[in-house]
Length: 158
Image (cartoon, rainbow, N blue to C red; front, top):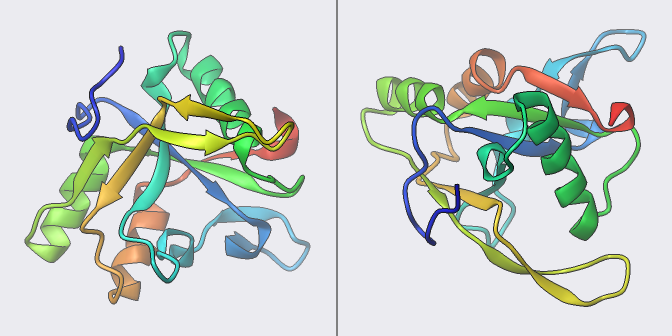
């Protein structure tokens, strides 16, 4: 199902976020245990968290996750040890609003993207955005990482 730009994602949808190796929680042997809250911090100049809408694709859940990962690889240099974290829209909103007492917006946000392969541009219709995510509350970001963004997929497994 294609959504219009800025249309709110349905609660049963899931979004995927690229997580570099440095933002993964690991044990002493470098086994990945989860995601750090810092994976959801915005970089300077960003006003939303960039994610991919899994349900944009039309296969099974796992096929859609793999298609989402392949989509990100088209325009972003994903390192082999990176992972991808999946969060459910309703669960993200519920946890956030319970903690912050204000809404977070998760919307379809198609963008023009430059392909790594040849430098051409294309419309990335699966792109979505999380707006109003509180950036000064490290405890909240850790809680989101531990309780909501906990379905991990290793880049090298897809």
